[in-house]
Amino acid sequence: MTNQEFNAAFKPFLDYFPTTEMTKEKINIYYLALSDLSKEQLGSAFISMVKNRVYKNFPQVAEIRQYATNTTESELEDRIVLARQIMKNAIVRYGYYSSVEFEDKGIHAAIDALDGWQKVCSMSADELEKFLTFEFPKIYKAYSRNNYQVTKSYIGYHDAMNGVPNINIISFKNMGKSLGNVNNRIQSLNFVNLKQNSLLEDKDREIKKLKDVIENKNLKK
Image (tube, rainbow, N blue to C red):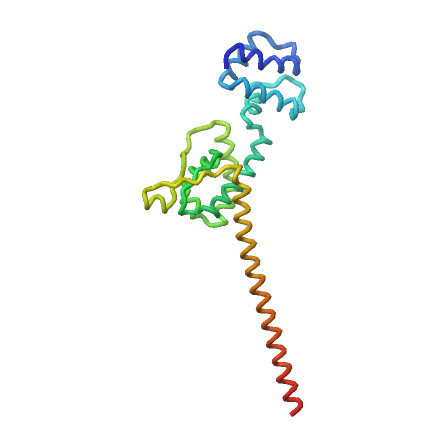
């Protein structure tokens, strides 16, 4: 972002959060600390702060950066909820054998911390739930705020054996469809179980009727 672009994008902050302590030197410090952002990000940060920020004082650089990069505490908590669900869903849908790449690279940071996708899929349900509850949020927040390098994609067992990667791209957009597939599978299994239980109940009733008939015949004799 050029100095001219910054001045245009920063002016609404000066108008909306008036302060008598702002000097040209301070504005230059803000520019140096925020110049790696785009003017669109800075503009988006201003709109978001007007809508959501409750404090009237002039925002510090760190706070503006959080709003500009969607890394405020509340935004991260919302993203963590979705990211955990996407990761759990991918384990069910694709598992150990398939290759995957998540659009949200915060999930990659968590997978890397566990030494890869195949290791993640090999965890017990209790181990995974414990990790997702306690460690996942810390790793996700650290990645979101520092944007360090993570593995681009993860090769499943089948693709590793075949030598031909077939990467499944997993994003927020296809999350609903994927969850629907899993839910449909679960509902189908539940329907089968209900049907089997119903058949067993019918057989029990038939057996009881036969017993009653036999007992009545014996009584008549």
